[in-house]
Amino acid sequence: MKLYGSTTSPYARRLRLFMAEMEYEFINIDVFGDDRTLLKEKNPTLKIPMLEDLDNATCPIIYDSGVIHQYLVNKFKLSNLSINQQTQLAVIDACTDALLNMLFLARSGVDTTQDNLYFNAQRERTVTSFNQLEKLVSDKHIHEWDYVAISLYCLVEWAEFRQLVDLSEYRNINAFMAVNDYHKGIKQTKPSA
Image (cartoon, rainbow, N blue to C red):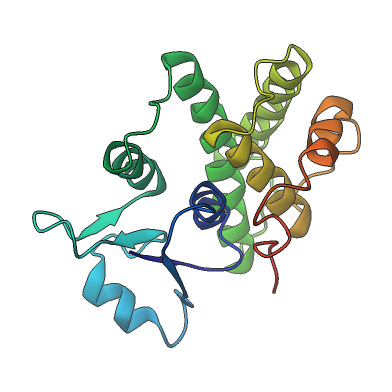
């Protein structure tokens, strides 16, 4: 199997950590640079991550981290996420997407500090999502090292790496990060420029 992604993508990193005990090759690609042609050849959505598994004759390339996760769960006969876990993951994904949208707009020269509907909605979504995640961690709903916890870990470390949010007030999330910084792959997959 080959997992295509970047060293900074929180979605690729969550899969790298989830796959820490699996045999696969990680292909680091620059989606906005020289590797864009490769991305276009393999993935019409032009997004990472994507998984190539030539053992799967019907669908050798799988797009989207959620679909890839489900594919791996099925392939290796792992436990499916419960509805509760899927709902928790939806909060993490909504927050990640809001921050990614704002990051891409800022990198495109758009002033995202403006007071308008779109920017306000993204900022509000980020705050309400982190407040909910703080509560979920505090109430021990996210505590085992599973795909949801991995996804939260990747979101937080990526958001801090990109300096997108100040998480200093989130005591329980910060404790969660400190408790989980020893897991296999954490140091090797840390976001880097």
